[in-house]
Length: 144
Picture: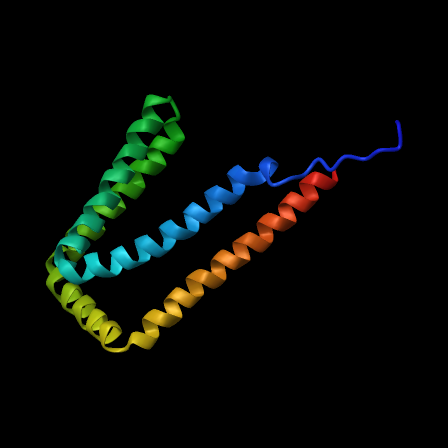
């Protein structure tokens, strides 16, 4: 109209997106550090919880599928729940061996700090990659 242009994009327009990505990046570093600590403390319990969590999740999928009347998804869910249950029963007696392997691997990781540094560098690199894609998304979104 009157020859003046306004910039519709500003920091305020995307501050929620920026802050949420910063928070997600911080949480990824925190959870990575926490997971190493938790795996070191109780590997046998962690493996058991993982197996049981898989069973509970597949059972919840079955229940929700039937509750919403989706019979086909419910039947597939029953099949996958049965397979998960068979798998858990077959590997349950091998948990001490898996825990010993996990302890050996964690001891090696703790003994070589370079591996941890590389892992955190990859976290930072993936965060930078995410930010580049967010900038690209915002650019395409604002162009339209």
